[in-house]
Image 1 (cartoon, rainbow, N blue to C red):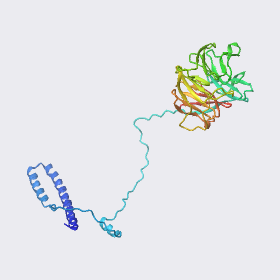
Image 2 (cartoon, rainbow, N blue to C red):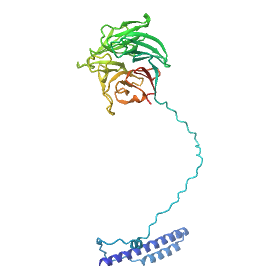
Image 3 (cartoon, rainbow, N blue to C red):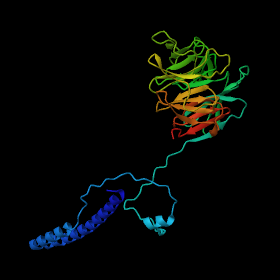
Image 4 (spheres, rainbow, N blue to C red):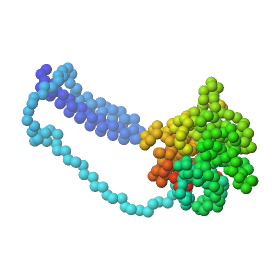
Length: 393
């Protein structure tokens, strides 16, 4: 068969199939009526009729050979396309605006979502005399001791101020040396480090200032533990000394089980609730009076638990220069970063969580940091004492 004959046969077959489909559709409609009538005689006559109608359709018995079409380049004729396929018109759909109606009331009253307090940073106290606030130690009821002085170590005009949340000064003590780190003993006396010695202010003896321990030299940090022991860092010796409240040495932390020094140049330090000792490590013996830490080292069970060198996910303007450290009730670790003007928040494993304060909040060259009894952060920023409330949000 020629290609033309095959094409004509296919067209006739297509027409026959279309007619057969129409007949079958009519037969099915009639069959449905006959079944509903439930008459055997009508069903038999129906099947005879259906068989006769379908017999008149003849399918082509000749074998049709299909060959791929041969395309011939020709000029596009719009009238020919219209005659073959018709005219396509876009369907028009009228969109009617929905009528404004009142919101249906819910059968169950909706509960109002609880308002979560947002993080806020504010200045609660500004130093009224020349100098810088180096350290802070909360006392309770919104009051705190702050240690002030001058970065020039030749100027010995250090002092302690007892201030409240309203910015009022209730007590002033002259120390002479810069109080770089502060801690309260169980009896309520004050311990402070000035970079050389750790000194005790004994309020039971009219506020007399004495050296806490002669053996502890070049001290940069002091903290009290949950057992009311005293931790003191000796920068030049690479030691952390645990003492009783009376000043006797209880334990010296220096080397691990392999004889390796755990901290080269310990600066500020703090004991976490889980017993870990978090200490800022410097670059070695420093000539300046108030050195900064290059890393955080966490000690646990006489060995190094982890180290933190700063958040690697975000690029800082400068390498971390850690000023001070504190821990909260959730065992989180908070570190003030002097040159990057921010506060790092870590979990107990040393994982960076977020920055809870930056330069955008008005924080500039932060020094001392502490947590008060209400769970707020007290931060020393140049000559200001700042509060960071709800810092976890």
